[in-house]
Length: 208
Image (cartoon, rainbow, N blue to C red; front, side, top):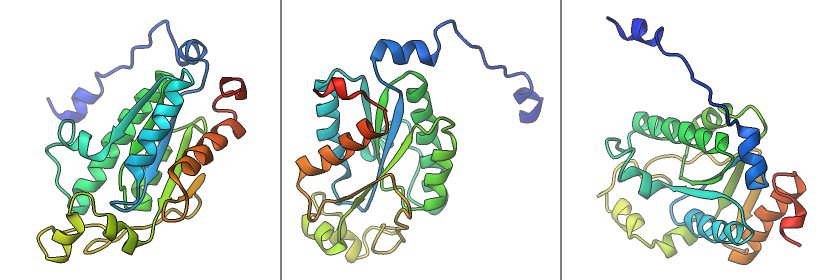
């Protein structure tokens, strides 16, 4: 039996508890906050702080971070362009499951290619995908270099390193644009939170 024959025998099974039920129980909509930016730009730092704030407000959250996912679900993938595409495809599917569960999921990946980020966005049909561009000058990212990766990349020890030997395509129209080289962490968190309230993802009453 071929893979195509097997695919014809796959049918979605819907339960009795749907997304609307889960969102009512959580008191907010399920959505994806997709943080993209160079290594060292502050994606993980901002997403961690924001999740902490959302959790304190009573929101159901889960954070998907690049390094964490690559040690488990995507440990078979490298950093070639092809593997980067598959990495984002899998994460996009996982994020969709979290949205269906009514959970605010915070995805922190370099995700350097616009086409791949659009692929992840295309899995959303309710306007529940929020792209957050964590913008930071390359020299500032290098000066932070918390993992020593830029130094290794400059020495040629890490091939296909985004910003050095591989391209990064910045978002053209992100829902939220942060500048972590000029904004404080608190300001960044408040900017994202403000967007979520303004667009009705979470209710102002949760914050008041």
